[in-house]
Amino acid sequence: MPIFTPLQILKLVDLARKGRVAPLYLFLGPTEIAKEKAKEVYQILKEKDSLLEVYNLNEREDNNAFVKMKGFQEGLFGIRKVYLILGGENIPPEKGKELVNFLIQFNNVFSWIIIAEKMDEGHPLYKFALEKGAIIPTFYKKIEDFLEVELINTLKIHKKTMDKSTANLFISLVGEDFNYFKNELEKLILYTQDREAITEEDLWQVIIPLEGSAIYLLGDFFFNYGPERVYRLTLHLLDTGITAPQIIGFWYRFFKRMQILKEILKKYPELEEEERYANFSKKWLEILENPVEEIPKTIAELKPFALFNLRKYLKKLPNLEKAFEELLKAELAIKKEFRNFQRVFFEFYLNLWDFIIKK
Image 1 (tube, one colour):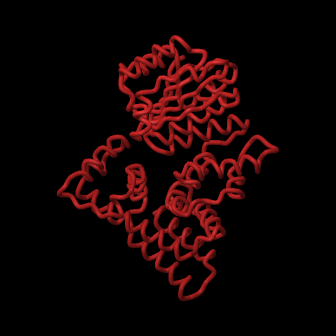
Image 2: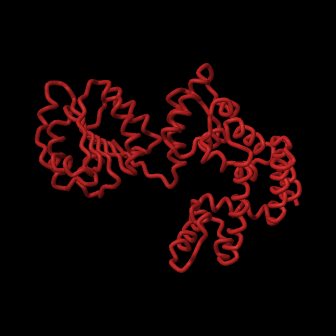
Image 3: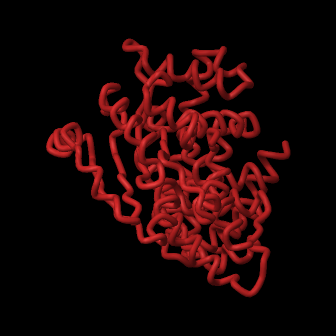
């Protein structure tokens, strides 16, 4: 079998379901992500009444037991034995060679699922998996990339569709918590069980956004979609229990970060001029790692991609003083004038758009 990309995992699962079970599945990448992908293969083997034995080689006791393990005869008598190995990067080449010799001799009796953060291409297990088994790399530059692949695969399994903008919104709403991502996606699929297409309206009806991720969508929505969409998101956040002062507080921090970033860009004009994200990220990390440079925590804690977007928004919003003025007016209208905060936010977004973005 060849190397399988994460998007091809369905093909790998389908082959196993049809009886084409590989003697060795090698999952490479971050442990939690690799474990999730490995589960999809193991579920099929489990349906075939296979026995499972797990070793975590990151634990000394399991590691010692694994190195001494010789009891392969347990998988005989027609029942496939599946070994799930965590921390596969700890398998010595000598032990790998021993396992390969055994797999060559009894490839229809056992299956090995090895999860490793990395493995040298010269390792006996890597070479065997490349020739006779399956290698599934699960490396991602951003967690959003992993969630996008998971979303595509899950929709395909349930014969559902979702356009690009709706998919991006869903991932943004559920944040980076994979378990939360799975739970909310399951709710969404059940809600739309009588039709194929999942729409943005379905998301607003079903998804409960994580406060930590959803509230940070406000800035992205405003600059990417305009006042109407960000107002709609604001109403949804208010309906889910997020308070008006929390939203005001977010906008204050958002503008404050822009103000700090503006000063940093003056000091590092090469960061201001860089249009390619990869180069921008590299230069930014070099600045962060400089021991004599003091970057305020509110900026240093941002991921490079978020900072890259913030810089883009800053170009559209050169008059930050006006932004703070509009925000203060909105805060006073809510806290001292006791005006309807839904109406206040509506006016705030329109004013910000009309008097700043368009001018």
